[in-house]
Every structure is written in C-alpha cells, then in structure tokens.
Image (cartoon, rainbow over all chains, first blue to last red; front, side, top):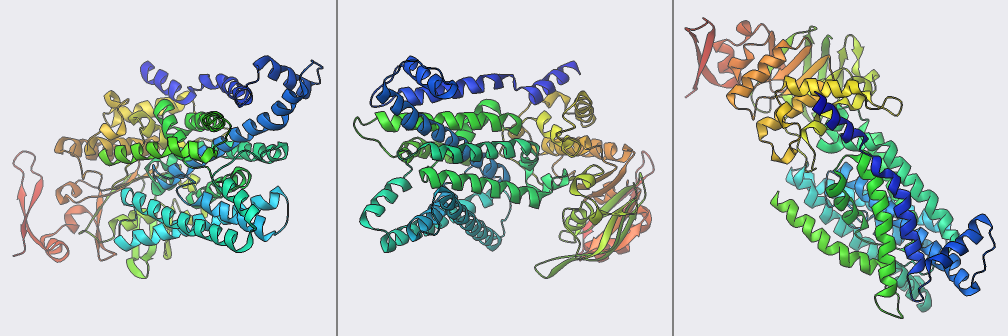
Length: 354
Length: 254
C-alpha cells in the first residue's frame, strides 16, 4: 500500500523539476541574443536588458544595444513563443486524433494558414498584423476541416474508421490538403503579387524570423500563453483520450465541445505563429515525442515539458540558422525540417514495429 | 441504481441497428446480454452508457433520463468496459487505472490520497497489483481486459456495463472476472458469448436482429427451442455430477 502511494504521488505530483523552467528559458533567450554574426558578451546583454527593463543607466555601446533590444531579443522571444505553440498544437492533435504522426504542419493547418495570410497580404483585405492573423486563422480552420473530412471519407470507405487504420488515412489527407493549399498560395502569389512581393513571401513561407520586431512579440506572447493555459486546463481531458473518444466519453468528457474547443484554440495559435514567421515544420512532431520519452505521456507533465522544450528547440534552431553559413541566414524551416524529417522517419519505423 | 430503457431505437446511415428495446435492470442485479454476432448487443450497451443518443425512446438511471444529465454526471454513476480499446501511448497499468478517477477530478478537486486508495483497491480486486508498473504494450490481451475493468471500477460506478469482457481471457481469468462481477453490489449489464456463463446471471436478455426478443430468468429463457431459433444450434442439457447444475452442450444444426 505504501509503495503504491509513493508511486501514485510521484506520478501525479512529479512536477518538482518545474522550477528550472524559467531558468532554462531565460538561459535560452540570452543564448539566442548572444550568439550570431557578431557575438555579444553576456554581461553586455544583461546591462542592456537592465537599462531597458528596470531603467538602470549602465554604459553600453549603442549599436550593441540596438542589436540586442531591437533585433535579437525580440526574435528570440518570438522563436520561443512559436516553438511552444507549435509543439503544444502537436501534443493536442496527437492526443485527440490518437495519431502519433499528427502535427499542424503535416496535417495542412500551417499550409492553410499560409494561404489565408498570403490572401490577406496580397489581396490587401484589411491591414496590419491582426488581420493577417485572422486570414491565417480562417485558412487554418478551412484546411483542417477539409483534411478531417477527407480522412473521414477515406476511412468509412474501407470500413476501418477506428484506431490504427485511421492513422494512415489522416496523414494522406494531410498531404493532399497541404498540396492543395500550397498550390492555392502559389496561385495567389503568381496572379496578384509583384515580383518583389513574391520573393519576400516565398522567403517568409519557408519559415523566417528575420523581419520580427517588438510588435510581433505583443501578438506572439499572449497567443503562446493562451495555448499553454488551454492545454494545462484540459490536461485531464487530454489524458482521458488515451483509449479514444468513446473511452473519454465514458469517463465523463463532453467529447464534441472539448475536442472542438481544443482544435480551434490550437488552429488559432498556429495561425498567429504562421502569420508572423511562416510555416515552420516538424516542431509539433519532434518535440512532443521526445518529451514523451523523457517525462511520459501524462499531460500534467507532458504539457509544461513540451512547452519549454519547444521554445528552447526553436531558439536553438534560430541560432543554427544564423551561424551555420557565415554571412547568410537560412530560413528556420530548413533547420527544423533537417532535424524533423529523420525524426518523422524514426517514429514511422518504430510505430510499424510495435 | 435501477437502469431502464424504454422503446430504444438506434440507426446508422439509415440502417436500423436497434428497434423497440425495453429493458429494466433492478438495482444490484447482474443482467446478461446474449445473441449472435451483429444482433445489437454493443449498440445497446453504447446507448445505455450514453455514448450515443437514441433515435427514439430513452434510457434512465433511477428514473432520471440520461439525456438530461451531463456526460460527467453520467460517468460518475455509469462505467463502460468497451470490447477493444487500445493505445500506442507509453502508459503504465497504474496510470490507466487512475484515468478512471477522471469524472471526479477538477481544478477544485485535485487528485487526493482517497483516489490513491481507490486505485490500489481496484488493482487488488482484479489481481493486478503486481503488474501496476508494467507498460500497457507489454500486457497480454487478458491482462489488458482486466486493467480496463479495474479502470471502470475506479469510477466507483453504480452501474457497470461490460461488452464481452471475457473475450480474450484464459479460463481461470474468465471465471474470476465473472465471479468478481457477480459479487459487486452494483447493477451490471454484461454481454457474453458463452451461454453456460450467461446461465450464472440473475436475469438474461436475448438480442436478435436489433431487438430484445426475450428476457427473464436464465433457465426460462435459454431453452433448446430458443437456441435453435436464435443461434441456429441444437442444444441438450446434461447434469454436472459434481454440483448438480445443468450444463448445455451444443451441436451445429446440420
């Protein structure tokens, strides 16, 4: 009995490691600010941050201060928010769809968001970041709806609507959806955008943090926090989906409203991130799986761990994208895909074996 | 709790799967549901658990219609063990059983030592204490079934619904699960394929073509005539020399 109690307690309250999260996050943010084309010593960063945040008056080089505050820090903060949001979207989709390969990028949500954002940017419906996000949100919901309907139709066709067969169908539907929306994006760009616009958009589509400024931070931070809070609030519901939707319902989860709310929330958060930095792939796939391996699949621990790891992963990828080729910045989507595609293959092979 | 179904009907894509099912299970009774494959046993259990809304008629627990209750309130009284519920998550037996406490937990009512005690108790009930730390994917089919039953029992249900729970079990665990279920002081509806095991229920109902065609005491219902009509087999009854109970033997119709 006492053994059972200790185990249960550690399983449910094993969150003592949580105190290191702010530490790790701050370290990652400082690393993201320090490392780059011109390395900046940490003490300079601390001075500049102190000047900006708590109004101290340390002497600091004005160019350094400009790079730190206007360029690198805002970029690192947005990278962190983006990593957190995409990774959490992966956690939620994997839990609700009972599919280890579910991810906002693979399932066409990012592609749909890109189309929506490009339509707004090029067609010029409204102006400013928010309407870009709204366009992305509508695109994201539209593409996800199409993908799910397609997967549903494919499943009822072969009569294997449940469990493992559904996994393959939704990935195929996701490919179809992504291709469709990528084609739509290309169509809109070719038809409406000027050559210069088109070049800018193509670069953004690959996932790009270069243009990020503080205005984007004020959109990204609330969105990421919203995503995190929604996931934490629903952690037990996400757990209850372990054996599928029916099992969740039999344990008292109002499946339709909860599932609908969670997916719309994640589509919204993904859309906000896509509208700022473009479609960054594989974050939602790699991070949740890595974290499941380390902290297990209970969402009380998985959600905070994934949020942190996603943030750190994207800050790290951003650093890599800036230092890998000297004098050039790679699109961050290239880095995440270079890491993510092999991880995808690994999950696919491991899933096949079990 | 008393479980009643009145004139239940259910259909999928226009194909009727259940029609005009009337059923009352008294508090504390074990009700066995038998019938050939595709006769509607699983559909009926899903309606009784509130997983699907009936196309007509209604299900009530203690005269409270199910459709007036929230899913969470239903789950605090009714638990279901599905036929096949699997996961690819790396999750331990103890964690699976803990899921059964979900309907009672909230932001205001976090996990407590009481929940620990309930989980420990139901693990002991299904004889799985020694496997509490085993990972789900290392379990055999029978072990998984017992964990699912423990998970349902962790809901401390007043009504327990089981869909062919003995399917994957070896004979020893079949008997121990049936014994456990029969001794529970709660209302149980259990679908079974083994008709001799169904004889041990307090009452049984026979499903055929989406209808509950007969219900009552086992010895009144499972007659050779009924077995031939519904299951298409000939049966004759022999007496067990050890305890004098009657045992059915079956022969194919041809």
